[in-house]
Length: 138
Image 1 (cartoon, rainbow, N blue to C red):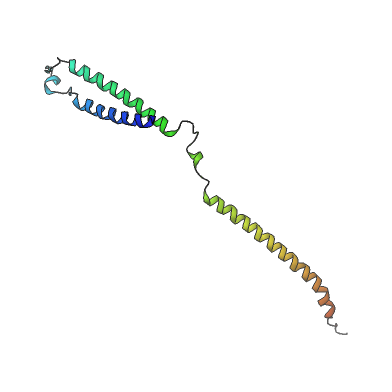
Image 2 (cartoon, rainbow, N blue to C red; image 1 turned 45 degrees about the horizontal axis):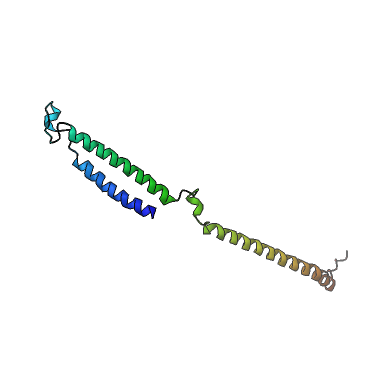
């Protein structure tokens, strides 16, 4: 509700600021550049002082509404913009691949140990069945 009211006020003030700047008369008339005088309805500088003061006040209100909207829009209670981001998916995939690789190594080591045990059990039996070749007699 407050942000909506400030947004509407901000738009109105910005339009009024544009109008105030465009209504100001320039100080670089050819007559005034060489020491001449400029004619004005409110006197020589009466209108310029009023428009300058009106523009300054409008600019200050515009500045305040801009800051207010920025503070209210970001939620001042947050500590960081990056803190709300989810964890990268790449890291999760690497962790899963590492776990799978570790599990694969453990399975391979278990299979190797089982094969090694079978080989050590079968080796003597095979060795007993086979006799070493007789050495030639001298």
